[in-house]
Length: 302
Image (cartoon, rainbow, N blue to C red):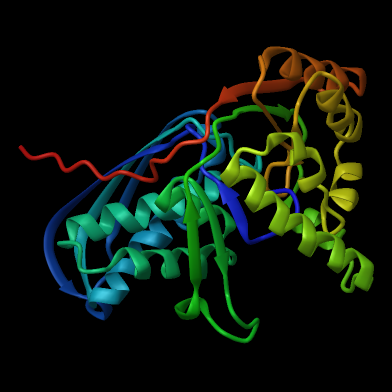
């Protein structure tokens, strides 16, 4: 989020649901294949594969591989509220749900810390999966780029008391495209700029000094490059501030924009929708709150 590129994330109260059931005997992992059936309902259901590769299935398989056992069959029922390819965490939600559900059905043999490490290994970076697991404002750091997720360092804070106005334009932004537009090297001044803003952003969000939020959300690593890929995004970014937002950023890699405000979020949402509309983009919107609650497991019997 903002200057916290690939390391800082905020949990919002927009959730997917996964129901997971196992049938048949458990066998050694390498002795058989699990037969999967997958049903998907809700937002963008048609965009979610109902066979392999499916991120939730990959996550479930990760748990099976860890315990070296697998059931004969598994059924996944997915109810989606998070749009696919939106920058709002649909992939991290699938990964976390698959890991946590499978782990619960396998007697919680994997610790929460190892669940986070597995999730980072599947997703590639910690800024989305760690808030999905822990809730709140979360910083996830790998000490060295040559080290794997087993060395993950995580710090969590209570989320800020702000509204999150989210607008998603009807535009498909491929993650590969969003990554490819980023420069391989950055000027030293830009690195210093982002380091200072990231430290300030954590301070602002954890102390409530929201009058400094706009300055803290400054970024030179990814948003200046990605905003121009999305029709109307730069105008919507400016419009959100003009309408009273205190901090505005791309959500993930985009194309969603998130605007944080203490005030009525409706004018901010309307301003962003109008700006995207002027660029010929229809939009969907949500008014959300940051949440302390990460992913939850509910066991059902009978």
